[in-house]
Image (cartoon, rainbow, N blue to C red; front, top):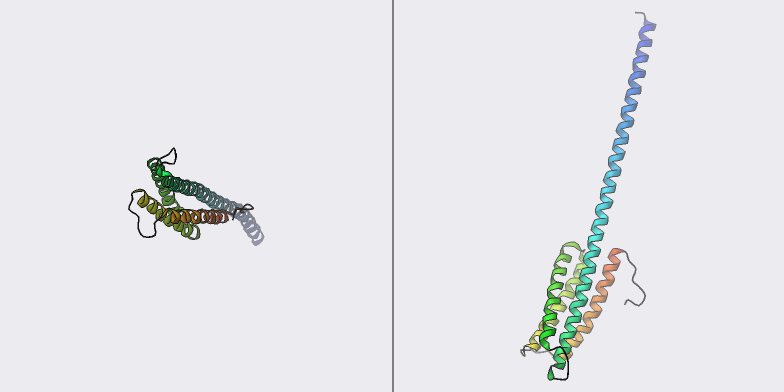
Length: 186
């Protein structure tokens, strides 16, 4: 075999190998790109699922806080009207509803402790402590065993402050979700 023929054969082999290598490299780049896109899509789905779970938790916590606070208000009114002034619900009925609302709130708050970021959880914790303190005061008043400072006026003041705290908590939740606060939600 002469040099020209050997050179031609080498060029042909290099050309065939280059074509095959080019196809393999193109396929490998496409696979890598597809894996990156799939990983990015999985991360987006996980982020959306996390946001959905947090939103659901926020809705449940906001609802539970408002129902607990409404039940505290009902309990306070039942105690005010316990003197026989014609209130249809006695302190026992209001107390039962209050206990149910407290239990529902406890469950929602427990879930929130695992899902929500610290800035929202800090405020939710403050609301939880205030709700519990007001609950305790109203139960002591209902059972005729008040502590110094326990009174229906003190309970009324605490409930008014709690409504503000719940509103602030809701604003912080909305901010975390990227939802602007509506006008007048202050």
